[in-house]
Image (cartoon, rainbow, N blue to C red; front, side):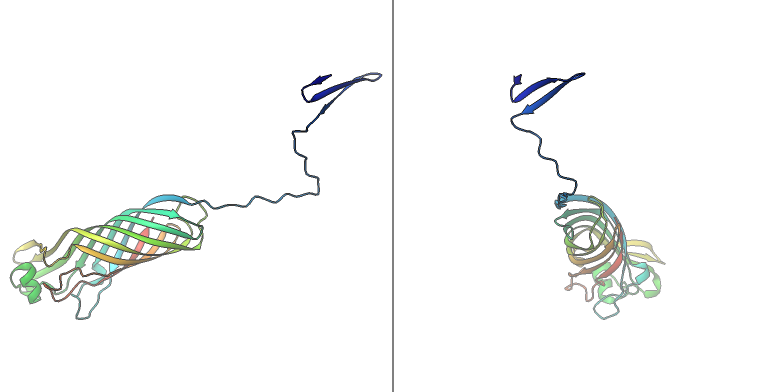
Length: 244
């Protein structure tokens, strides 16, 4: 009996009937023999995107040269809070974009009593013994781009893992910047100066990280103060740690 490509043959034996089915074309591919091994498929990398939040704290390194105002290193800090977007192009290479809020607090030792600073920023000269505390503070919005090279590639697709080195640049806009004094005779006062304090800045950034932690160094490439108004600037180097 024939149905389509199949032919049915019925043979009667002494006790049972045997049915054999034959097809013109066998739709099933031949099975490999017991000794035959097939090659395993190769793992192909696919580029992907991921985003993470981060926070960090840094310490501004004092520079005692004549180009910079003296700041107290342990009390001059930087705080970063933001997001990082990673475009993983290969197992060992990625492009990064960051958007963050940055807070800088420079604690001066003697800037407010320096004649040019006092005249330009404060408007009058102050006696050094009348100043209890003097700081410069800046609230910034910053955006940056960088490249990442993995010494140890990440094990998981969408998590910050592996050991890596980042190199990049960052641009800052200071939407609030001022000098704050705490005086014995007149309490606390804030002094703002749009001419002396530059609102825009650029920095070079390097990170060395492992999984969700990274040590970073940021070097400001531009002046924080207008050199036409003030004779010295703020120290440019910040070193700290970031958590992703």
